[in-house]
Length: 397
Image 1 (cartoon, rainbow, N blue to C red):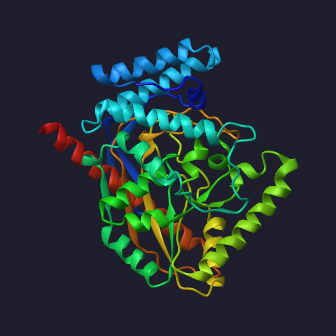
Image 2: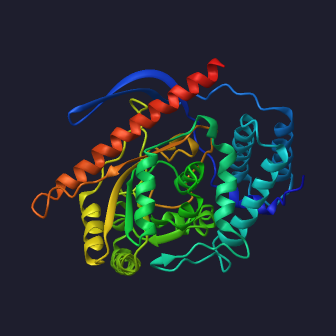
Image 3: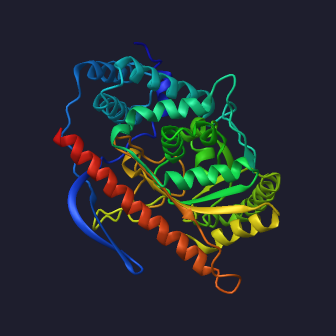
């Protein structure tokens, strides 16, 4: 196996604390409904043993990184950590070969170096919308293939299949669908795609449009994965005020993005994934729980307004994502790019609620957003409990 030491520079951002599911019973109360889950995040590093073939992949790559002389010394520890983590994740997945692991690392470094590193070759996204690049290199498939080895698909779940089927039938008829989702991992688009494939909806997964923040279009490592997705590029309210000198231009881009989305929705048959929280769910460092981040009512109001203005029937569904462990975010929000990253082998899950009823009206719009949030939370804990059942059953065999 040979991987260019220079190409490994693009992996410099990939390092983070490790996390693991531990068994603890914690009651969850949302509104008038109580949920109980025994899945809780821990900062303790799990005791794992990498198999010799994957250890060889790891050691070969790390040796190349440390001896090339072309990788800045301060980057080598984080690079070595990422390589070790990815090799470990692949090692835990009994259906992945060392060759596949090595190929994925090589491809990731190549496309990140070609498109992600600052400079004249860095890929520049359109200000408002981006269409997935499938040729001559298929960036969509690259992203799916890269993260798949880190997913324990046997213990992963899809709930609300009948609601997904209904939503995609609406799209087939030329109507629009908006999935109001919590957001846990940078790999959520790949999580959604792979689990939709599991229920026979690969084509729909490929056609979905994702509302994306500035990081996924400017971060060197994220760029190649984003190139494979249909995107509506927007600045979330969490980051738009960070630099007052760019607030006006960011606001203008957001307006352009909304106009582009309205154009899409007027055409009909569009499926849109958006995280109304404006960012990823963060771990509570005191309790180690990972709650769903609060939905922003104004964001939901805007999407409902766009649906109304489009004059095309638009349907809204709450979507729960369980993917935190796959690539956990930092515990605090970071305005810049190049955050530390980690990848772990873990089960994942998605759950779609029933179509959200048009409650609240103009005078009580908060009721719609509240309902969307409550259903997402409910489905989130249902999904985690189902994953736990599968994991326990698998361990007992």
